[in-house]
Amino acid sequence: MSKIVVIGANHAGTAALNTILDNYPDNDVTAIDRNSNISFLGCGMALWIGGQISGSEGLFYSSREALEGKGAKVHMETEVESIDYENKQVKAVKKDGTKFSVDYDKLILATGSLPIIPDIPGKDLGNVQQVKLFQNAAEVIEKLKDDAIRHVTVVGAGYIGVELAEAFNRNGREVRMIDCASTCLSGYFDPEFTKAMEENLQENGVELVFGEMVERLEGSGNVEKVVTDKGSYDTDMVVLAIGFKPNSQLGGDRLERFRNGAYLVNRNQQTSIQDVYAVGDCATVYDNGIGDRNYIALATNAVRSGIIAGHNVCGTGLETIGVQGSNAISIWGLHMISTGLTLEKAKKAGFDAAATDFEDYQKALFVESGNEKVKVRIVYDRSSRRVLGAQMCSRHDVSMGIHMFSLAIQEQVTIDKLKLLDIFFLPHFNQPYNYITMAALSAE
Image 1 (cartoon, rainbow, N blue to C red):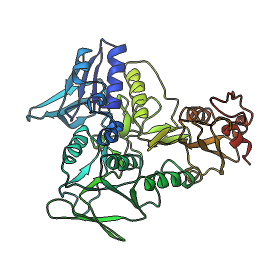
Image 2: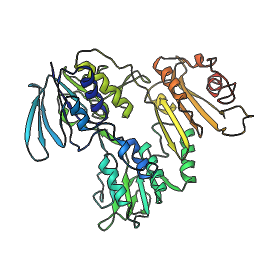
Image 3: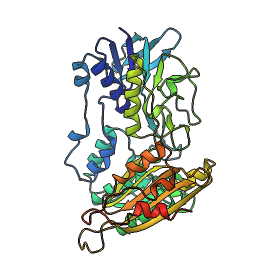
Image 4: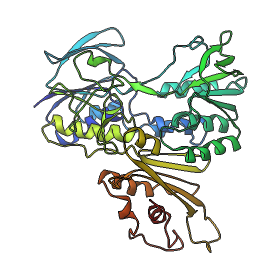
């Protein structure tokens, strides 16, 4: 029997705990988390704020009681003060001030990420909101009961920022989105695709302010104005959705780090200390797109890494097969999906990268209803010919198509292999000359 301690019990931590408890029940398992709840699906936060779901009840899939029912000792609202890696001991303090320590044979760090909060004047004004925890979402929803909050400014135009812009608009607020970048979603899509999302947001009433850096927030008590390097904007609420950084301070100077501070782990999720593992947003992943370790903070990656660590700490060797960073967003019915590297990222990574695009209707042209256009881009390396990434955009649900591209990147399939790929045809579903093969055939 091993003493296993898991610090952090959200997605990655919960996956590790369930893996251990379900498959290796004879171990002594302790979970420690600073929050009062676990397993909150932050991806549903915008749906809740926007009134697309009736409440938060379905946004949790586990609980303290569920883990304790499987045999774990669970300490909630408990802060880990330090870790003695030499003597294998975790020192923690409960909400009431009670201090205690737990010895371990194996340790899993699942401490997640922290929101990036710019150190600017006015960040502590009222109605300046973070968006990370269940408590953050609940606070925003409570404040929106006040009709005096008529205008919301979202700072950050990544996935969370774009989703929240839609959510606040659906909630009946005027919405502005500000970002220092020249477009939205630039971490996941090339400009030919981000343009479609820009137009979608503007058509639905979201004001876009790109290429401006927020310098300060002004107000008397509550925020009243956002001041950038190029302008000044009145508002009643500011939501900071700039991004996240690894929550990795517990590693001190003992654990090796990635350039952004995330714990460097091998393909077993093992850190630079033998019996210490790291999973989820506090750790790196193996990125098949670049063939090296990278930082890609996604809930899917968190769950997979937790499963891998859970088996390894219990003696079952299991390696990650790597990830592609597959992701998607759906805003007012516009679905955008991507995997692997954008053309811009591929070039920055040193590839002799090119992209091939194709746009066509999903179904045969004689199908008169429910037929939407689909735009696809395949990014590939001219030298090796292997597929590096893919992007898709449509008002038709084409999301399943990206899984094929994800597997293609993982298995280093060449663009030429896709040219005559056996893809079925039936007018209810698609066209005889499929846009995937047509895009591949158009490659240089």
